[in-house]
Length: 354
Picture 1 (cartoon, rainbow, N blue to C red):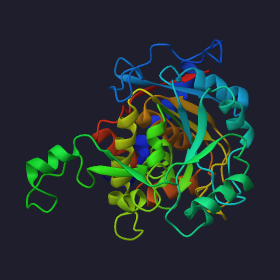
Picture 2: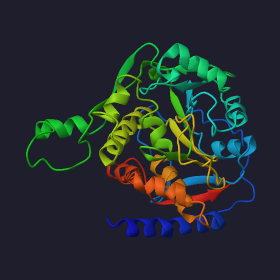
Picture 3: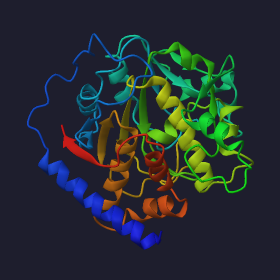
């Protein structure tokens, strides 16, 4: 697809997203600390509660504060029961663009049986090994609650639905004339073994740019972040550290395996603050080049990531250019296209202001 056409399409949907903010603004959104439902869906059940008709619900606030975060989370926490892992990016030591600790500290305090969950990394870093990773977590201020480095004791393999059936039919990835369909790379993904300790997963994401993915949203947070440091991350990266569409597709497939494991007991919160072109995995990330936007939450991973991208495209002025260039130059929109191909959510959504 012509890149200018892609850009114009996202500009159009981004403008529609801003219009939706005004159209769906609500005066009062109830109790921000509403308790989860007593009879939550079983883990692994199909995701159905994110949608109204053919559109997903994405909740939005411009209030990037503890109060704002509590409000949007209260709108999507109905399936969050049992032992809850909070997957976030703890960042490199003294990372310049890490989200304020006060936000997640306030939210975690309201979630019983919760812990921050992370995995070790593959690239050279003190976060590559559990002992020094814990030192970084303390340095960056995330030691205010239990922190579980999920691959500290090894890996567990999660199946990626639909992939094995495809291989059984076509006899392997090297078959001539095999159609290009969902599941062309991975049939399972190695995750930190401790992931299996958790009944629910809150994906708390710092939305920003990314050197290989174009942008890092909820999909990147689980597709790479929950993959184990030495096995799962190698599966996603493939041979070497080459980016591009094939890397992004493997990352999406990994995310599908993880999201499918939790079913309705997974939810997504994207914080659009400190919008650098670089990830928190870059200890020397560039300063943010555009203004903060807000916090979004949904039970639909595709909808929440697409809403963030649309909002970036819809921002006025020239300061968004650096982040847009990063997204487009790394084929970042492929994340959204392939999530839709794999049936991971809806790219049509109502943006509802709280």
